[in-house]
Image 1 (spheres, rainbow, N blue to C red):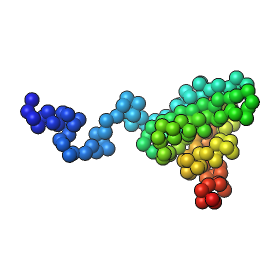
Image 2: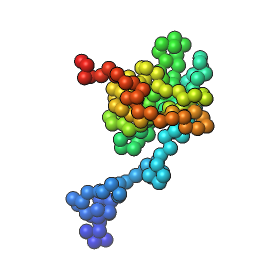
Image 3: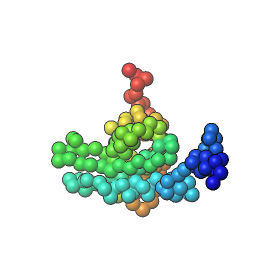
Image 4: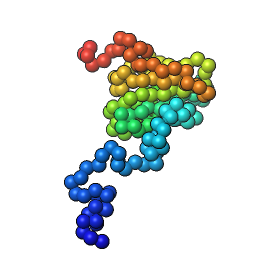
Length: 164
């Protein structure tokens, strides 16, 4: 193999100094599937819901948070016998994403087994605002989408660093 071809192969088909374009990024199988038709964020939240630890209320919730890079981070509610230490699916997804180094987010899907949409609670709205800004919020149940909102509409007067 010629030296220039060896160099090109060693750099993923590019010569030294060439940069990847967005079209030739290396993508894992999950990212390739997302690119084909867009990721189904609600389906990811439905799958996450199945992992909920809701032994006391039996009210399972799943959330799927999309980062600005297109990575999907999921969460489910986790209950505790004291209830006060219970954590909602939305906060699990956000804290998990933050702990993995993600800092920019575009939208979150929230799924529960209810007829009416189940929006984030007040604590979740605050956390989502502080770390995600004016996210798009997709609400759904097990069978259908129930609505799309902006976080600013659900939390019109947020408390944030501007007030400190």
